[in-house]
Length: 318
Image (cartoon, rainbow, N blue to C red; front, side, top):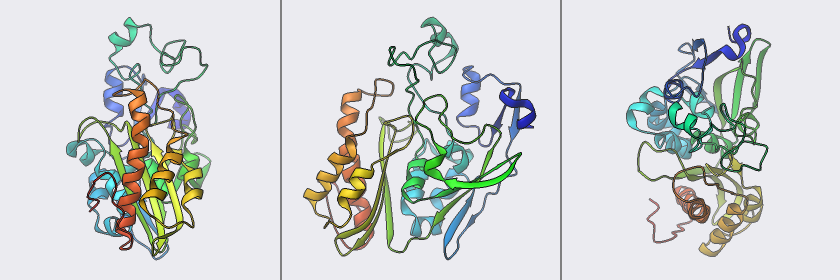
């Protein structure tokens, strides 16, 4: 159906992001293709855990296996929106959630009054008028965490099935933000079992519920005592795609995890983050807060290893 209808149709699972955008005429389609048939099971295994794309965010956040073995992922799922919407929203939907912008996520009448924006019906990006591209920001919470955990997604389309790293699912473009084909469906997420891997996700937003992230940090750590053997840091809501902090990963690997090292790693991780004036609160404050959420996420992940007890900024990590 998606192949035949092309841009006239869209997929819908929980619909928690899609339906409001249809109401605001951000999407204009003739048909919705329901994905209720997608698996809603979490399947633990010795080498990997598979989550059906239809697993709700509430189910993922409360799953005992995920909470024990992929704490950061369960944490990220539990921080999406509010309880009623987590009961409907799916993990596949959150991986594919649309990018956001203050000039885009408004009513049709508001957008018409300002002449629309590049992402929908307009000719320029109102955040950066001299830029040829759209700068809407990635707003997924589970996407960065799945990347930090080196997750893989299964895609099914008219041409068959394929698998790719979660990191390869995204493009750095506010409009064309997904690397999958429009007619492909995310059917599963696989999280590999990496011995000694511990993770955490810290989300910054104005309110403690409902709001999308305005900065966030997903961290996965392997520690040997207080020495980092492996590290992945991925930032949310500071670019048009989940932003990998590879330089910070390399800096931390092989080092003892103390407060000074963590602060230095957080500074390195924050450098590529370039928040713009297109989300809640001021962009220069959000830029400063990237360092803080990275510090907090590293501290949480380290505490969960049962080894290091790094505490930063007076925060009780557990």
